[in-house]
Structures are given as C-alpha cells and as structure tokens.
Image 1 (spheres, helix red, strand yellow):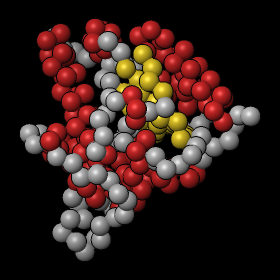
Image 2: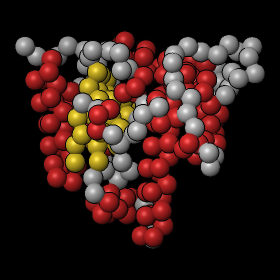
Image 3: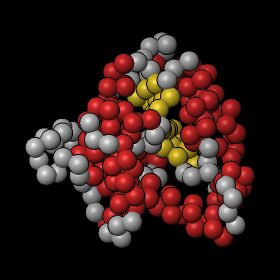
Length: 207
C-alpha cells in the first residue's frame, strides 16, 4: 500500500476511536490520538499540562461556539506574549500532525486532522456516527454515571467537539461534505467499518 493517512472524527460513543485503532492494527501502521499533545509538548517545549488546560479553557468559554480562529499554518515566536495561547498550542499540534503524515501511513483521531491535512492527496477523512441510543448504551458500558448524567456528558462532549472543529476550521463538524466517508457504526459494527475504510482506500488508490 502506498502511503495513506486516515483521519477519523467521531461522535462520542460511536466507537470511532476504537475503529481507528482496529484499522491501524489491521494495516500495521501507527495510531495517534491524544499522543499528539505529548508530541506537540516535546516539540514546542511547552508543558503538556498547558495543552490539556487550553482544551478545558475553551470548553468552559460560553462564547467559544460562536467564535473562530481558523488555522492557516505557521507558529508564533517564543518571544511573543501569545506563544502559549490556545491558537499557538493548536498550531504546534497541527505541525506534529503534518510531520506524522510526512513520515508514513498512519491513523489520526480528532484534532481537526482532516482540515490540517486537507491539501494532501493521500488523506482519507472519515466521520463515524451513530444514533443517540446506540452511543448511550456504549458509553454506559464504559462509564460509572447515571443515564441522565451520561446524556448530559455526551451532549456536552459532542458540542465541544463541534465547537472546537468550527473554531479552528470555520466548518461544521458533522457536515458530511467535510469528509470522504461517513459511517454509521450501529449498522455496520466496528469490524465492517474497518472493512469499509479499507475498501475505499483500495478503490481510490489502487489501480
């Protein structure tokens, strides 16, 4: 297989991250999710804790969903007061994502990777979704919360993912037009989602 980068965005509870890990294992290629924060920390010299705090700061900002700071590339100088701003922390994550894509085939979950890599011809962007009741049942299996608490948590998490995506891309997170493939994991199951992605790669890239 030629070098292919698969990016996965996903609703909470849809199993997108698990599907991504399964796909990476099946293809024998690296898998990246929150490891990107550690790599961005190593690259920038900025404590990883600040990357996590930036996410939480944006999450708690009531105006976050209505604003945007579309990523255009580049980095802010260490001499600048904005060096550890949320925007520059994302810039470093994007830098890491681009470097990982240069190294070879891999699967990247979240972090607006589809947008960061939108100009690359060898990227397959996937959005994994599922009905609310399916996401709820899967989430309840993995978390010690009441159904009411979990319902609020899922809604809050998906809202944040949508706001995060819009803030850095200017696009709507769950708009099918942003992705090459949109897969309903409740209808296919995880293994068939993996097979669908592999089939798409084969049809698109193999002569």
